[in-house]
Length: 397
Image 1 (cartoon, helix red, strand yellow):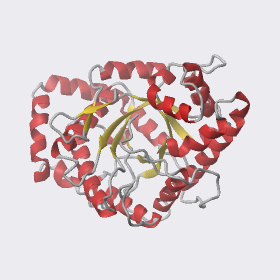
Image 2 (image 1 turned 180 degrees about the horizontal axis):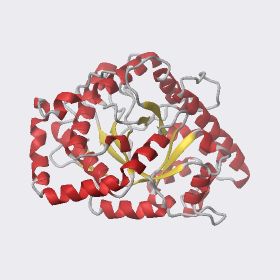
Image 3 (image 1 turned 135 degrees about the horizontal axis):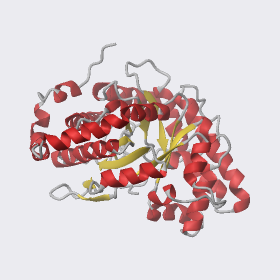
Image 4 (image 1 turned 120 degrees about the vertical axis):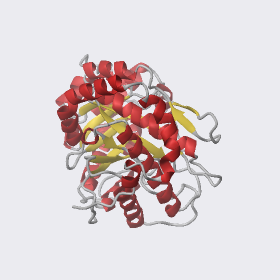
């Protein structure tokens, strides 16, 4: 099967768009071949396991639940249902999700915050063990959050957390995590964002993260999120997203990241939240697939979309459309949803012990909907869920 990738030129070092990218990489490469050799040796120890884990996460009919909100962000969610942001309540909410009956039929992995990875269920059993018993692979958010990008546009950020990451990843692996996530954020504005500095910084950070966690045995989920903020049209998003993904895969190649042991977590290719026109699910699906086929190598086993503020129902419908049409890309197109998988469950649970089953039923309904969407079999409206947008401007967590 032949693929036409825009990234090919970049991988060969021929694309002028990446000429300015050579500078920041050169200083890293000049650190010597010994570090590179050690990285390859460490990565080689885990290659079979990395590929196996990535393939399992991307297995048919399954996707990820993202429960990696920071303490501050989950506090806002709990506040929205009148529940105090205490460790006990955070434990109760995540415990409700992790013990939903047969959740492993639809969910292959759970991305957790560090607190949750080391936390026990109220019954004393570690959450990691609960997940493993359910057939759900434990994962961990490893970035340390966003900071303003020096020299960049006021809305631009860079992601922190590379210092000590190899050692932290090894600790997470020992605790039972088998994959990781790092969220870089970019934004489209009428005055030139994302800038070249933002593209380079965020792509390079994703690549260094991916190389670091693979060295410690964790599959890296590479997440270059393009926020929905703005009034731009679908064609603009498509153009920018191609540039973003091409830059990211150039950086991954430069860092010798093992692609069969990775997953991509992109935004769907949608217009800005304030765009005044209308686009159909079929148009979103076509634009997203075209963007991915132009940039993502076939060695990547799975693409796990973030919902990015889409409603629960729209997130399922769009995913279903992508899996209902013929395409060249061989990857699994599946979900890695937070709000679009859990909003109904959070409301149904409401922080009440006697509503655990109601919360679990709501969660399982959306999990089944997205499982069916991964297979191209979801019927719109066949599962209960939120139809209203979950978009939050400048979303951070």
